[in-house]
Length: 168
Image 1: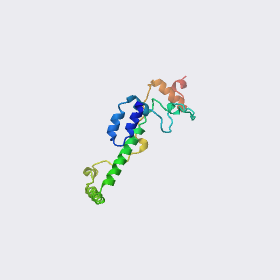
Image 2: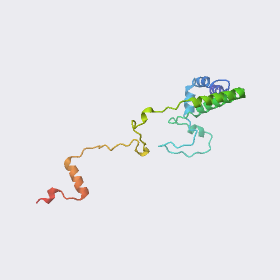
Image 3: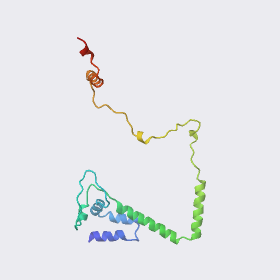
Image 4: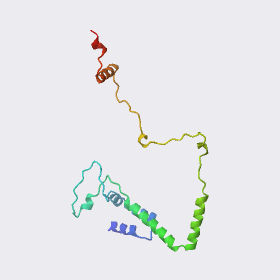
C-alpha cells in the first residue's frame, strides 16, 4: 500500500519535478529496484540469454543488479518540460510572442562571431585529425631479450648462417 501511494504522488500533475523527485527519494529500496529493471531490448555482454516465456513472473526476471536504467526519470522530465512549454505558449498573446521572436532574432544577428586573430600569417598550426590515428601509440616492449637470443632470432628469420657455424 505504501508503494501505491508513492506511485500516485509521482503521477500528480500539480507537483513540480523537483518535489516529485524529493518525494520518490524517500523510499530508496523501491527506487533502486525500479532503476535495475531491464526495460529495453538489449544483450548484456558476458551474460547468457534466457529464453523468455509468457509467464506471470517475467517482470521479476528482468531485475538485474548490474543494470542501471533511468528512463522513468528522463521521461518525467521531458513530460514536465513539454507541459510547461505548452502552457506558456497557450497563455501568451500572439502579438507578445511575435515581439519576443523579433527581439530574439535581433539578438542572434548582433552576436559577434569569435575570430582567432592569432591564426593568420602562419602564427598558428593548422592540421586535420585522422580518426584512425587518434590514440595511436608505438608498441612497448614487454620483455627483454639477451643480445645472443636476439641474434639467434634474426639468424633463424632471415636464413643466414651464424659465424660460429662457418668457422671450423
